Length: 391
Ligand code: HEC
Ligand code: HEC
Ligand code: HEC
Ligand code: HEC
Ligand code: HEC
Image (cartoon, rainbow, N blue to C red; front, side, top):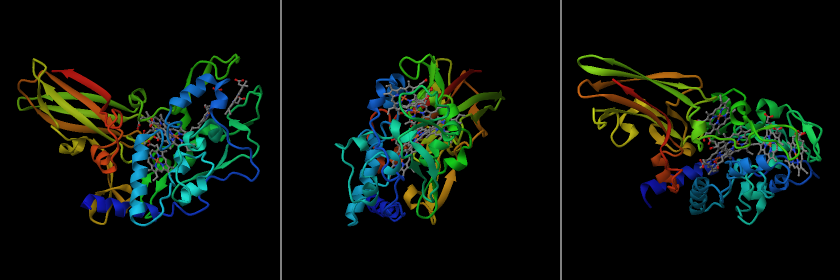
């Protein structure tokens, strides 16, 4: 086994020991509760909302629809197998919350089965709309669902042919915090801590009002979009950070100042620690040829340009989340943070200076380690914002 393989094996055992697999760790559904039903059943009346949801990561979060999630969970499963432990799928708490065998998946008694529709749904309509309360947990939170199958929303119209109930959670964004609040490992290291990194109402930015009726036959002209865009969406990314360039030209150099400001509701990039962003600065001559750049091959060549979160265990830096004891470095932009990066670019022969903020869903090193498929999305360099300045 390679050193990396051996390391991975150890890391995954750490996850396993993290206490995620205790039996009974699953969402609470009261005895005798109405069964969760397919999102497809809502499509006939709520056509626009259904098609937005269908294309969203919420409908595509299961191992059978998200190839990156699947790659990571397979690594996790095979490393447990190698260690002689029955693989468990605690990920299902958030990635396949509707699974009718969720406690068994989380304890390792059952394995994910692509023929079971309740896993394929991801976070479907009835799961979200039946959330009654968020149950706080140490490693991560969970939900209590309602018994009567009524659909919760901020302001029920009273016109629906099905049961509806008014719920404040759907107005203030708390409804998201069963899955998006936090994830700690067994050593208490903060893997994802949205609850500390962003405090605004998630719904105001992630579920905006758009054209189209929420239901066939309604007099309403707009509805709240269920596309729930994030890092997979270039338009959403373009709303995350602003960028300005300022240049002071002297005889010695062009002193370039780039100002980045986080205008999203939380840390950028957020929240999954495999996300990464970096600034690419180039200087071009009169022919548009790049004659200077802050990095050649890897963003690591210019540490001030890197927006990233990494972990450490003892003295060892850059360890994966599951081995983490503490955060080694967190250079991501905090909510509302404005940061200036400075560069001395050669003075001669330069006609334009260009700055681009680049975002990646998965850092190249993470893709390699987890064998995440390069499918044109996972490995894409998304340009969040770009500016060019003539000198
Ligand atoms: C037979 C048509 C029909 C079906 C099927 C249907 N709905 Fe509705 N739903 C309505 C109507 C009508 C409204 C009222 C909308 C309005 O006045 O704007 C509504 C409203 C809602 C609301 C908002 C509450 C309110 O009163 O404004 C939610 C949430 C909701 N439906 C969820 C669902 C879900 C989830 C499903 C699938 C399990 C579903 N609906 C299936 C017709 C339907
Ligand atoms: C039952 C768990 C669950 C609930 C409830 C939930 N989410 Fe998610 N959400 C997820 C998971 C899991 C993913 C990642 C899916 C993937 O990438 O495979 C996700 C992804 C996202 C993304 C990223 C999309 C992208 O392009 O990467 C956004 C934004 C988001 N959720 C916002 C919300 C908001 C806002 C709410 C509340 C209205 C909410 N979520 C409720 C589990 C949930
Ligand atoms: C507490 C809820 C929760 C648990 C448990 C959980 N995840 Fe997630 N996961 C999320 C949320 C929420 C997102 C989206 C957040 C974001 O993109 O920043 C996500 C995103 C991801 C992504 C990125 C997917 C993509 O396509 O970009 C991967 C990979 C992933 N999770 C793997 C796993 C694996 C493997 C496990 C189990 C070992 C797991 N997760 C357990 C909530 C969870
Ligand atoms: C002020 C607007 C704003 C608010 C409020 C906001 N977000 Fe975001 N969010 C964004 C923007 C812009 C992005 C895209 C940049 C990024 O991916 O970091 C984003 C990205 C995300 C992602 C995707 C990260 C990924 O890895 O793909 C998740 C998940 C998310 N937000 C969840 C939430 C949750 C949960 C809340 C509430 C606690 C929230 N957001 C509040 C603007 C906002
Ligand atoms: C991630 C959680 C989540 C999922 C999944 C989800 N919803 Fe919603 N839905 C919400 C929230 C939160 C609101 C309230 C938005 C607001 O009022 O700001 C809402 C609002 C609605 C409304 C009222 C919309 C309006 O503009 O009047 C309807 C109808 C609805 N949802 C139907 C559905 C249907 C049908 C599905 C599945 C195709 C679905 N929802 C999936 C969270 C969710």
